[in-house]
Length: 275
Image (tube, rainbow, N blue to C red):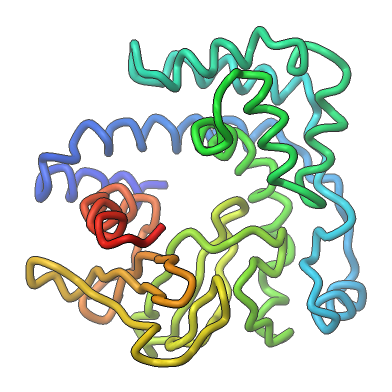
């Protein structure tokens, strides 16, 4: 985490417009690290089982999600609240979620167990409980849920490269990618999972969301002569993903920090009609 702290400080000085957002990120990372210390991974998967699933095109956690004890989940939600910006709409959403019948009831564990099989349905149910939309509640939930998936995922990441997984979803939990990077040594494209933070290799000129590889529909753009950061976009499905080129940056990319400090690229991509 020390390198993460260093990168946050460096970007806070280089891009002062993101200083508050980076400070918030630091608090969230500390919160997630403390939560991870309380989590005991319960899944035990043999290499042969992993290979069989990956050869069939199935994520490792398909059919069985890591256990998320509802008391610890509720406690984490409550501990997240004081970290949120005062008066922000997400704080109000979290308040409604914490007092909703679903979260205080025994049904919560069943909802959380459905994350792998139908995460959209899970987020919809929790959004309904908080009287909001899935798009509003999902970022909050991912902050809390990520350590529950990241910690067990770490046990199996070293098997991924040998498996040759080249799909656009995470080989561990099946979530969509959140960011990508071009490896500093070889320029290999690595996608990063939006939930468990697993990374896996993927074709440079292919859209991870729709699988399209026809140019010029799959392209990229950058701004302000910043060749280290770009937006990979697809004119077929209108999705985008931000990418950090470590060869240009001259250092390994800490993607959570890079994500916050390139928020202007998200805004620009959405203005161009991508999502």
